[in-house]
Amino acid sequence: MKMKQTIPVLAMTAIMAQSTVAFGAETFTDLTGYNWAKPAIENMAAQGILSGVGNQKYAPAANVTVTEFASMAMRAYGGKDVAITLSKEQGNLEEIEAVNGNYWGNTTICAAQKFGLTDRFGLDKGRWSEPATRAEMATIVMTIAEQMGEEAFAIKDGIENNIGDYMEVASYANDMRYILQAYSNGILCGTDDAGSYAPSAYAKRAEAAAIMQRLVDPSKRLEVEIKPAPVLPVPDEDNVGLSGVVYPKEGDIGPNGKPITRDPVTGVLGFGNGQKGGIYLGLKSPINGATIEVGDYAPDSYDNMGGRYTEKNGYTFWDVEWGMINQAAQAKLNREHPANSTPVGTKADIYGNIITNGSSPAFYEVVQPADFKAWTPIC
Image 1: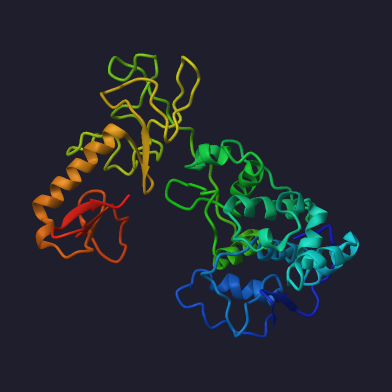
Image 2 (image 1 turned 90 degrees about the vertical axis):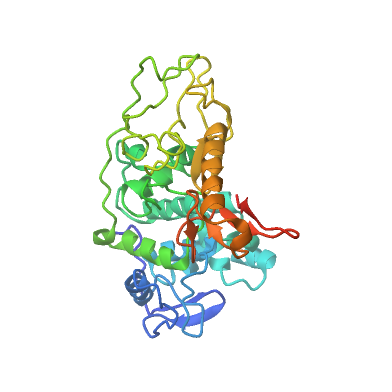
């Protein structure tokens, strides 16, 4: 990777999480279950881009903090001593130390002033010690990459088609450009089959290592092929609301690219075909231009489904639809697994199927509040 900085990667020693670890000289002993991330963790450690937390531990399951992630991104371009070098340029390290005391990340915070990141996170170690959200991670890594490297990170036309939660991403005004850059270039992409970015979610240190590897090694980046734009619903006599809103109908292509079907049990459009509901989200009222979001009321009633939108464990429906799904699941549970003969704590999914070991999101659980047991919605 070409770099604007000419700071070399020297002897690979660094301080992170208040412990000193020799890069490349340690085998992490806590990577069991992280085979997908182990090569990235070990490779990035060998290059001096990241370090462990002491005692031969990397802590792959821990949330990566703002300081840790910014430190990794700087080292990716400038080597292990980059924060020290840049903090000397800024010239106010002592002032930051006076505020934060003996905090290992003081030099990183001081260096981050060069990139404008302290405008976002301030100088206090309390904010920098918090877990970084995926929105913040995109801002940190792309800001540093743009200013320290020579690679251009273009935003691909139509990238919004790939992002399942694009409307949520668009609400992150300060981070949106960086999210689109990171997504377009395969550095931070989707978290599920719908390509959702999940801007408010935290990332683990294992994921941070993979992100760093994608940053420094383009061959490790995720392939990003732009999806076709969603097919807008075609109006006919069955799917136009009173206000003129054209709603999706059976046979249209849903948000996940699959044809919308009507569930044979509940009658809910999209339910049972992977849509998880939400097929009406994003539609705009021709009356006032309002876009339907979770928590909003539909502009009018279509197919007797008008009402407030609700979200349950990633499933989104109008209230009336949710009532139909809940009724069908409860009826199945009471028929096939009566609460009075089912152990307390037994859980079931949204379809009314018994689940074990978190195999699916749990929506119902058998509880015993008094002298009786009952199936009770969890969310």
